[in-house]
Length: 259
Image (cartoon, rainbow, N blue to C red; front, side, top):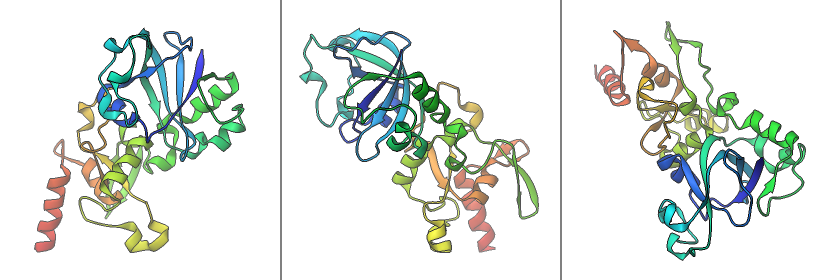
């Protein structure tokens, strides 16, 4: 069975909870969720779009069995739930922040109205959401492709990125947290190109890619930094089997300029 549930990011910080545990424990109410059901989380105003796809991992959890996520609740604390209330554990499967999952597009593919509570999803709507909930299919999330050859000042460089750098949710969180200026060289595309460059930047994963497993949950505050395309290519380029950290690349640029 497939479901959509409404949520409000101003009342609960889903991104941080998923980042920490890879799941959330969500109020179940009288809904008949079953293990392995898919649940899509729809953000109400102002986003009005599906942001997360989850799978039901456990059902009928009592308040003593759920994670203490009170720091992520902005409206109701864990100790305010009664012992009779039940929760479902929703494991994160995919996340995306993209226009194809906005309310107006969902309406064209089987959504009958603004979600006011949990309801079952039609096959047409599920197929449509699954087509776009996977961030790696979203070219504008991260302009480089996995096998792109980029010529930087005469050097042919293969830029390899993975799904974590492509996460539109994590990317947007990173930019909101750190801004759009390159952490290495300081380039601000809006200052250089005006309106054409507004909001444009790449996002680089600080942890080496070979240390990241499929179950890794991204920490947008500590794992990601904004970088320009040239610096990003240099960060992925290896010399004698080793790539530079962003701090090392920054020092290299500063040293070159000093010379």
